[in-house]
Image 1 (cartoon, rainbow, N blue to C red):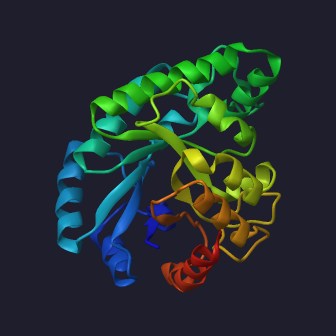
Image 2: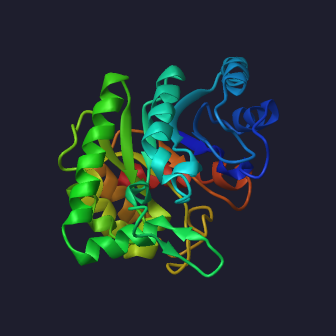
Amino acid sequence: MKFATCMTLFLKERLCDDHFRQVREHGFDTVELCIYPGHFHGTDEEVVWLKKSLREHEINVHSMHCSFDALTGEHLDKTEQILHSNLRLLADLGGRYLVVHYAIFADPDDLIVDEKGKRYPGFSVARALKRGPEMLERIKEGMASYAEYARRHGVAVALETDLQNSERLIEFISDADPSACGICFDSGHAQVNSDAAQLARLLGPRVIGTHLHDNDGKEDQHKPPFSGTIDWQGVLAGLKAGGYAGPLTYETLTGSLSDITVLNDRLSRLWEDAC
């Protein structure tokens, strides 16, 4: 089993050569990039540096998380432009899929906004899904459109499991070209939603990428695997039964690279034993 890591442990820092050096020293040669304010924006200058650093450290970009500007609800009028740019960058870097959330489909005229002005596009979409079929069609049409754009650029788009409605993800991508669209199974989100092991078995046939982390089943804590409540044997069995053949990608926000590297053997054994 191959392992990869998201660069999320470094989100609070500007992406630099030392991060890739650390990743390589801990045995990873495959990563998921994050487009995040203050970390990496994907400017032309940054991309020139990035390609050089990836070559020097012999690291491959397997996937990329979409720009967080597309998830805040503050740029809904530019979402398509942002994601198309992300997909082109992914293709340029030789990656396979772009991770997105259904929050990108929030209706700007129907946003939940708190008293401080903070927008909640994900919760807004979840609310709209309960009201009627309009949001479902909006998501299905949108995913089909992004999948077609991704296909033309030789990559794919992966809809990530979320804190709600993860059991509906196959329905959400049902109109999209399966060769260019699938699911990113985020174990932590799935556990907060309901039960990660059950969702892994349900969604497994359409999973094309993973985000592995753990929590207490109540909050999205992004802790290393085996430090929370997730049934990892069940999760890996579900993914394997569904035919998943990609890397197991860590997406932790706590701990260190050493804390996850030591888990590789344990996860590998569970994968081998899964049936």
